[in-house]
Image 1: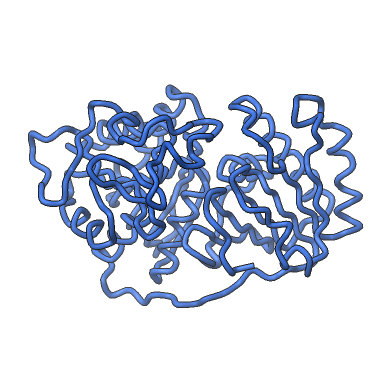
Image 2: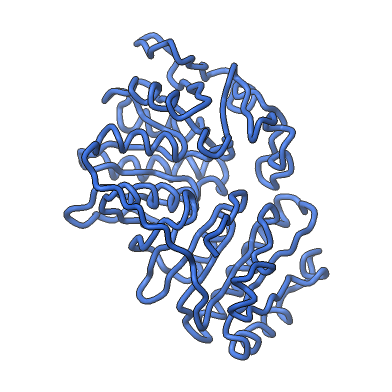
Length: 372
């Protein structure tokens, strides 16, 4: 069994979806629980990316301690563009579980995210020249991975193997999927694999070569009583899609005064009646300039409270959430903590169920494509 420790819930869902697509039995939880018999991949979403560094280390160590006697392969899911407490969390797992090194491959060449000569590129542009420079929590101020992660890491070229005297954490260069496979083949039981979805898929191919790959190409369909939470300022506006028009979705955008710091009580009180009347309601932070970290933290709490009130008003058949921090905040507000995988609609966009409600999670920076 592979146990994945992910630092945000959309990343956890992306990994769970990749394992589901690979034909494996998958469980996802927001805390450590004993997985059911027959589980191939167990994914734990910790949300440590949004924690302080000391709290992130403490939580990562706690989860790692619980895995000591589980005799499983451990994979550390990190953000694909290196947001969060990447190095300190890797160090916590290495020290707790006794690894000698970590091989980190965060980039996803399948999504045109690559590392070459120490520079991170997104769609051919250096990272610091992309929209990630405006991230409210972890703005990309440099495109060089050693600047982002610090001097204690080493760059691992394709033609170099890890040796016992290498640095503890090594970030692998890879510009295509063949490069990813080459780097993954360097992993042994002393090396902690860590990184993004492309690396994880290569690891699955290595560990489960005879799995029956699922080839379903399904779409998300409108249904009565649905809630859409658009919590990312980076995302494409779903409310302009034919999906929203077909479901007659009403969009309630956080008002300017609430966005700028005024209490949200009046706006929140208006939502249940709109939901009962329209049956499909989208709540959105709107396409605004980055208001900074404190603004982002406050907005995700408002979004979580809004969804909590709507679910209490009438439990929906479908909840769609954009943005990892928003998704985790909503799920914790609902007190839902263990999910079954329903579908991987597209890489990174995953449907999972809690009771008879489907929750679709999508990272804010990923496109919807044609699944709506």
